[in-house]
Length: 225
Image (tube, rainbow, N blue to C red; front, side, top):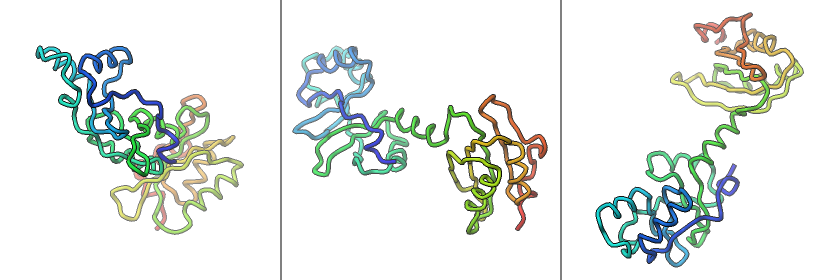
């Protein structure tokens, strides 16, 4: 997934010479909390609703240009940037968007924090009817293939798959979303194949499954070295 797939192209902006009064009117009309400031097709800063209201409460001139009130622009991303690269760059920055620029530096779009969170939810399959399995897996070749084989043997279909590292260098977590007729039997099959079944949640009715196994208190006990 790339930034071009989740970005917003029709962006409300103000120019660096726009007045504080004009920028505040745009904020109040749109409900935006931060607005890109542009000059010669490039983003040069960001003006926030907080800065504009502080400016007004301080009794400063409504005709003061935005350029003297704005904050710095975030480092931009490209349309070809990966979504995860944009998410990593979003961490710790004060605005709810990143600018997206063309190859020549022209400001063209934004990618918002909301869009990145929505993509995260989509990657995990949130809102779908299926079963979510969280498995502890030994880091060795063929593990994902074996999981897929077990799902196939139970006439299931993997709709989403996410992996991430644990604090154990030879273990990682696999999160599977699977459409399957017998979720409990599949959870049991994973455990019998040596995978640590941390949980299995049926999202058709919100009921956790795996009662034949119980929630493994020691997931390593289900993993054969």
